[in-house]
Length: 225
Image (cartoon, rainbow, N blue to C red; front, side, top):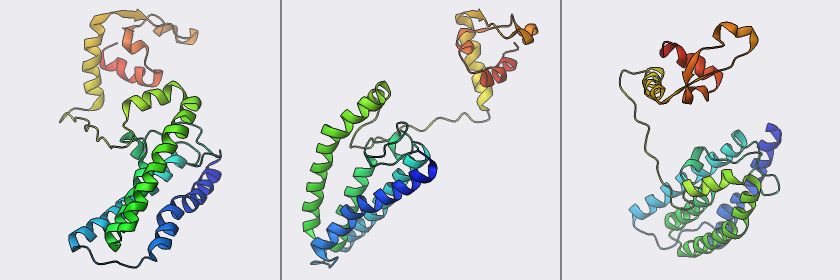
């Protein structure tokens, strides 16, 4: 799918699906009129939920275009599985964002009916994911989606540990030290094209031999090879 088509399709789906679920239906239930006011801290939490949910929702839609070259709509799926952005932490950030906006409106407007509505929507999302979305994605992406199912939770976001940065050390310096350790586990001879005869018999570690040329050529000088 071309980038323009992905953008246009995602924008249309954003209006027709989340726009209706988080906007039109809550308005039809409440007219966006406040009920008996909840305490101010509760209403502030409601505003925060609305803002956070809207931000995650827009980020998720953007990720579908940027990474997957497609849309969230089942009729125009992505060309590849989307696993970055908010999808690194939870498999269903879009559904959680929608529920956050609905629950936020319930607290902000002090309208319990919206909490009931949020519960109904949550049950519908869970059923859709369980009986349609997961089987469909499994057929489409196979082992890649199986690994994603195993590694990333579906509904409770799990923040991954931040990468540890070693002070005063560049990434290639650290890589060189790692490769020097790996070199002790065996070496192989790499065959290279005939026009690089001078390098035909250079010896490198097994693990380094599997690296792409662009990275291997940078790492070799660090090992004195």
